[in-house]
Length: 321
Image 1 (tube, helix red, strand yellow):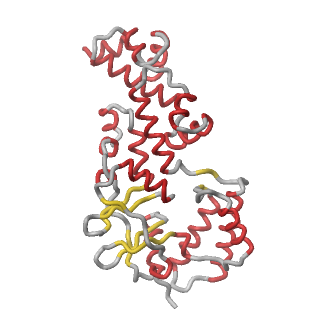
Image 2 (tube, one colour):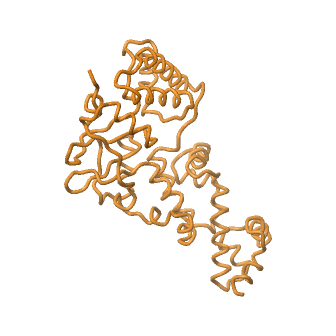
Image 3 (cartoon, rainbow, N blue to C red):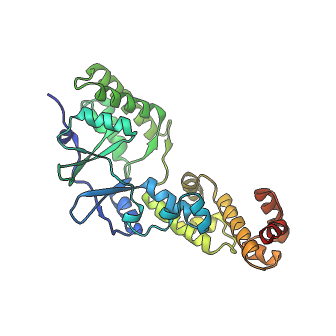
């Protein structure tokens, strides 16, 4: 028997129209605990996909000046207001009638872990994930242990572990290689992957992935507030309170999403604002320092020189030359 995509796909799949606002997309991801949402047109055909990876540039660009966002290539994502503006196109899909090996080959070639399943007209039918390609006996000891660990959690966990990833890639390669994969190898690799997944869930190894959609929504609101209040103190405690999480949890999700600490991010935005005011206004350097949240002109000068290699006064002279 040759397995087909329709034999293992999940359905239905949560979707959103092209006009869906960004904040509503974040809410959909959080409510349904999904990392990506297919975007459909008025004819119900898939036109794109919005994932957490698509949301991160918008979050990261919040608070940047327009010129800086453009230099980083994030201007379009930063200004997105709806799914149409933010989605990645085309969404990778496969026919429900395609052999399972074809899905495996496509995932391997495109380096993705999920494909949307469509009919001949392009209408969405479901989705297929890498982890669906093989299951151990549901009565296997490790499978039951994994089920108990998952049942003890309020929501499905996300994590990254090199051994789980490697085992999954080997399974994918074996299924893609032939319509008759080596059953013994597949079972041993599956057992290893599930056992290591259990170890990760038990806290013995592995690490968390970037924050989920709810955390991204919280961060976006905080970043918008930072950009509008650079003259304020902006302590970690205050920012965590605005995000609705503990200070330690806020520092962790901020670091994971932004690649830097909250303090470093705030300092970077303040220095960008300093440079903007120095070159576009006639404000005194002391006034610029106060408006950008520095406790003294000397402190601002030291930070500015460390970041740009010149003093604020020299930067202003060069801009006017």
